Length: 198
Length: 198
DNA sequence: CGAGTGATTGACTTAGATCAATGACCGTGG
DNA sequence: CCACGGTCATTGATCTAAGTCAATCACTCG
Image (cartoon, rainbow over the protein chains, first blue to last red):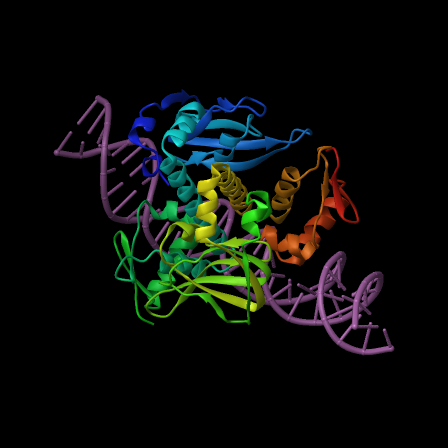
């Protein structure tokens, strides 16, 4: 998911950082595309505005996310991008990337692999969001994120962040976990959740 | 999204169709990967089973979808795939695909573009699912799917299918649309929905 | 014609959102 | 060193929108 996974250091070192104030535009619909952006700090909101002025959010890219990857292969952007709060983005310019793809086809392949993994991961999250019950959604997450022992899930980040990823309010997540613990379905020990045999 | 968009006819003609009965396995976790599957008819359920026997669904590939694209780049599968009802799948075998990628690098590029578009499309759907209100979810869909006139959405498929795509029950969708029509927010005319100025 | 499906509306229930309050913890600045 | 502001974790009370169950009508197809 991170650029270091697929982009060689040589090409990464050619990246350009840019700082944005809250609300400032990174690019606008119709602008010529510059390359691939990665959010280093803060958030970027991608929105499309219809002619009556209503806007619809396409994506909110958080720290670590890349954005508008399809624009790499398009001459112009088809949406607007605005910083949410003070933000730093890193640009891997199109010329640099394509030169690298050409020089070393393995890089293009690695990029493709990364995209394929993202497609599958996104589909899995989507599948999870289709589950109505909070508890079942948590179960789905846990079973798909156990470690090598097949029963322990190490949580990275806060529970509030996990709640957001699951599409639940943090209260709903706390309650679901509390009930699961009460029912001896899981055991919580600061930072990890262990699935208990049923 | 469809294989014809990126795969040349020569390579497509080398595809192999396979028929599966309901419940029959297309592949199992640990099997050597064969290539890229496309669902021609029916559905395929991708599931991962933890050691206590609980299963979690990764994806349900519907007619027209491709599945497990990341497995293209992996020696073995990491999940099980079962047909849901009688199903026909089409296999683009790894050797054929990679030979084609090698012979004609533009194909690899086209494949990559398709994946990048899928990533963005999936993120947009995910963003939509994060919207709690049924009405706002419908609005989000409509504003992002207007035609060239910027206000008319042509519906392909049934409203029930749309409801599923939006992550709503069909009743909830009917009601949301009915209220929006009553409020003069949209106008429905069999097969299309027109956004009215507000 | 009858079976099957989509579209639609009504009545009722409920799970999760929302609002609110509390305690633990942590860094920081005086 | 400690008080203070901030955030996370947690639990309670309440509300409501969407899910669930159910019935009707229109339409198509064999």
